[in-house]
Length: 437
Ligand SMILES: Cc1cc2nc3c(=O)[nH]c(=O)nc-3n(C[C@H](O)[C@H](O)[C@H](O)COP(=O)(O)OP(=O)(O)OC[C@H]3O[C@@H](n4cnc5c(N)ncnc54)[C@H](O)[C@@H]3O)c2cc1C
Image 1 (cartoon, rainbow, N blue to C red):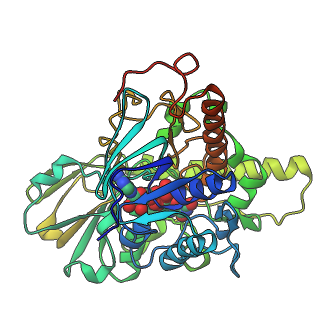
Image 2 (image 1 turned 60 degrees about the horizontal axis):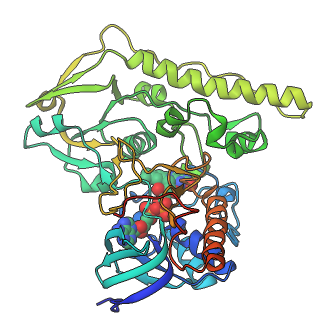
């Protein structure tokens, strides 16, 4: 039973104790700002419960740079497996001992007429001068409603529920979606000897290594990860972009869907309809594979240009040649019974759920309106959103940089409030007058 917090007041409440919430806590501590971190479950909950058994990071370990606690293990160029990621977070907690309360969910957040934040939590009512929402980028599993028409004898799960091939009934598996999760789960099943049917979407891919180094290392040198969202003319579209597929498994390698197909995996275009046992696919498989390869090759082009411009000594490398092509015999429908498909894994992403936040800072899609995590409501911040500021904002790479920025802002607001003689929010003459939530 969690301790009761009923009636407590904190200068800052951080909601969520994942890598973002912990980073915020570290940076607030550094600035001497009293706060509490409320975590609904346990530190590392997402990594513990929503990643499969063979999961490993796609980003190299050296990119894990939580504030004050960069990866210090023996394999900076490697890719931590799931349990190592959980341990990294646990060690971070041991390292700086944040004021963390686990097992406390914030069910409702509103702003009172005086500008004080009121949080209804599973451990009682709490108030705060400032709040950092760090509840993660991926909330509710998103499954297209056509799933409701699939025959009842086919087991359906979302990628966040997938653990291992053994968890599924015998038989073939349909994986829907080729973002990072879909591709890695398809590979996991394929390596385990399962017959995999894969509905291929429009996600791009990137090679793991090129010209002697991890592509991530080249892109880092090229300043790719330092580029802020404000530098893009299509910021909105950038925020919605699907991640490139690649894997860190076994030291890292490409994910080449064509090679899987050559090896017996069945590839199709996007899944567009389901009727009982009939699955219908779009005719876009070739276009999707070609586009993914084109993106991977264009990234290599930019690395080549960078190497040439700086006269860097790097081994040359032959370009990718497609090892398989879909032909005219590619079916547009598949019958689950005759194909022996016993389960479906929807690797179709997540939606965000900020419904518990009763402060009007959201746009028409329910996305928080912010600049670098600072909202128009004085004292309310977000941390850990994908592309909050840069590519690594929703990842280990830059969540710390964003946390530093926010902590400075929290500190400045606090000092301003002190100077102006008010303790909550910003004075009306300096802040944006908002309706109370
Ligand atoms: C499949 C997958 C693979 C990924 N691979 C990589 C990778 O290779 N490299 C990389 O850098 N990133 C990767 N990421 C992205 C990112 O690192 C993770 O999503 C990470 O979990 C985000 O950390 P976070 O702290 O922002 O959010 P989370 O880890 O989601 O933590 C949020 C915490 O908030 C708690 N919480 C939620 N709501 C409430 C509430 N109302 N009250 C109290 N607590 C609450 C939750 O219990 C949770 O512990 C991956 C993500 C996914 C989904």
